[in-house]
Image (tube, rainbow, N blue to C red; front, side, top):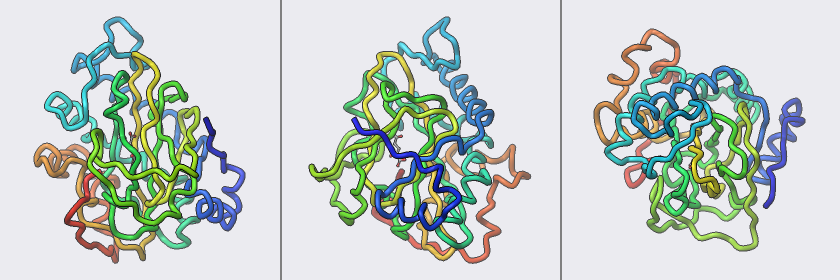
Length: 293
Ligand SMILES: O=C(O)CCC(=O)C(=O)O
């Protein structure tokens, strides 16, 4: 098992930070996201899970323990929980944190913006075969291959619980042709056996950044009872092309309640809602074949 290299010491040296990203296809940073906000989100999400009967009775809420049969993203029972989560302003605001923004400006060397679609994963234990399979985000995100994906744990996620792993150097292989597979995203790409998987003991506040062509997947959850909660989102430099589907909420293809009109009605006055509509020159194209995160 290989652990990510931590790159916090490069934050004051943007050229070296960019070089590290270019060489390895990822950057792993500790203590970027604000602890209180991450834990506040974790609490809200776990309350929704508890309300749905997914958590073990009598256990500490923040431990996120489940004895429920695994529930897969997209399933009927999952939808109301995910709709509540997607209507949390704090969930959509987290990606806009100034430290994330500053790092992205150092990477892109121009003004940047966060793609509005923001994804949460509530990954059940005892379900590894239906976890996120090895894939490249570009298949779904389209547009510029320079778009950066970010993944962060919503709570501590030790190696035992899994989290995200990635294949270091895989961004140099170009676009890999996927085939259908179970799990979120529904595709898997071939793995270069010369490359190695890296992961880490994730802590609250950590941020993993990776390139659109970097192969990544859910690492196995070796516990019997711990839910893994995480957020993922993407950034682009203002001169980069994005695809129109990413201006919509995750699972917008199901219709209401996964539309902005439904989700942001209680936070429409805040700067989190519809911020992209005031950005001057968004370069938006279509991505008809894929586009689902
Ligand atoms: O958290 C996961 O299981 C999948 C996340 C992912 O694949 C992504 O961030 O692109």
